[in-house]
Image (cartoon, rainbow, N blue to C red; front, side, top):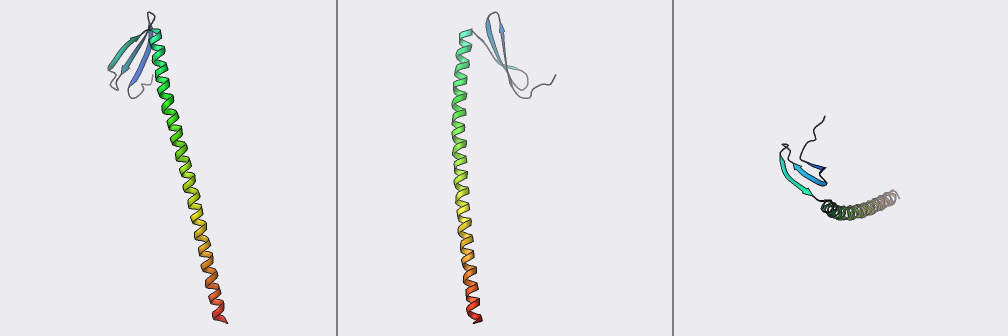
Length: 103
């Protein structure tokens, strides 16, 4: 059997109640609680609510990051095109100057 690294939660049922235990990385019991069925459901709903809230805010943040990356990429592309156009104009001007010298 492989032992999971780090702390862990153990949940079980005994005598029509839910037992909830938290163990440290050293396998020492940190906390223990006994919940009635309705308390366990309320706790589960509360945990789910907070997890959903964090998850939805993370999605918004990652979307904002993606948008800013897209904007940065578009700005860089635009700058690259501007730079290329400037280089092309400089080359054209130099070629024209060279042609004028040849005449």
